[in-house]
Image (cartoon, rainbow, N blue to C red; front, side):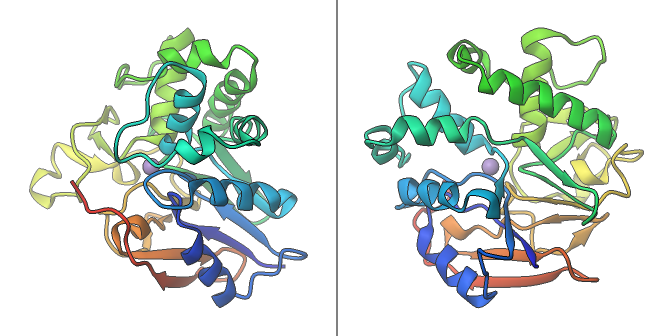
Length: 278
Ligand SMILES: [Mn+2]
């Protein structure tokens, strides 16, 4: 039995099918882990959502910022923007089943036997693994409740950026969601910084660090696979974390990382690119 983690799809189905062919994925035996952002910007958001849902127990998908954005568009008065490709989902006959399935996906998945943890963007440096799991479960419970709309309407915002065990209510939930699904950079003390999406700038390393390079990061030592950061550079181990978002939607590649081998093995397939940056 093989386990593959697959990078951000953002509504691109054909690269996924090609990639699964390439690694000879067998749904009767193997498992797929998806780093989230299944939908938006690509041409087949609805088909990708149905495909991953239909894999049932052969797939684990964590929530990304684009998945949460779809939920916000579906359950609140937020309107999709011009570059979004969510309309086919919002108009689909099976939209309610799909959205209900999506909002019950985890924010973090950990397999202690395999020794890997899956998240969309990262784990806040202030959290060790049990702490991260605790707050993931809290936010997941909120998303699975019937009153999900109330939460989604208050979800957006950059604050608070600094962790404190005294945070409560919507502030704590927003910190959790932003850490798992939006974070890239932190200040050297671990405060999240949402001012830039670019690649790390060595000249600014005394102010802004990728979350996985923050000194004293409490999840250090854990193998973590994530996506969300297509400008980070080649997929490789960085402090035992692997970013496998290789910018499929931008004409880069779709990447899978086999996790159950002594050393992780990369599989990639070229993507034609459906969106231009900016
Ligand atoms: Mn993302």
